[in-house]
View 1 (cartoon, rainbow, N blue to C red):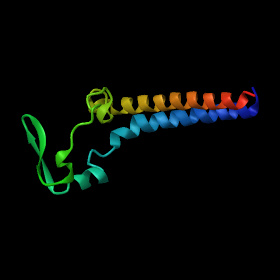
View 2 (cartoon, rainbow, N blue to C red):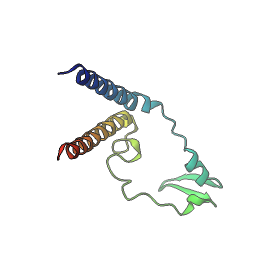
View 3 (cartoon, rainbow, N blue to C red):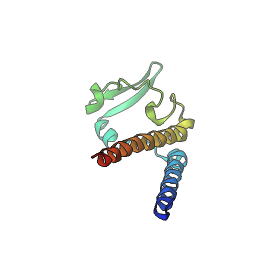
View 4 (cartoon, rainbow, N blue to C red):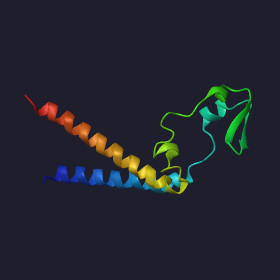
Length: 116
């Protein structure tokens, strides 16, 4: 194994460990407050909690919004099955999925450039 290949491997391992730590640890400190887009679309409305759930009262852009068709998927809401305690695990699984997809894409691109 050449020195360049070894250095590249250590860089990728270090990068993966850092990404997993950030996704797994720092995600617990993320704000639960709405981001800029959410707060803008909710301007003019009030979120009211009822026994049936929450709904909007007032007049705002978000008044006609509906749930996404994947809102009941296992990873919706940046958590696993709605469990906020597993936010870090969901983030780490997302990092692994991105690394796998990127690795497969890079190999496909590298193979195309090797073929005559």
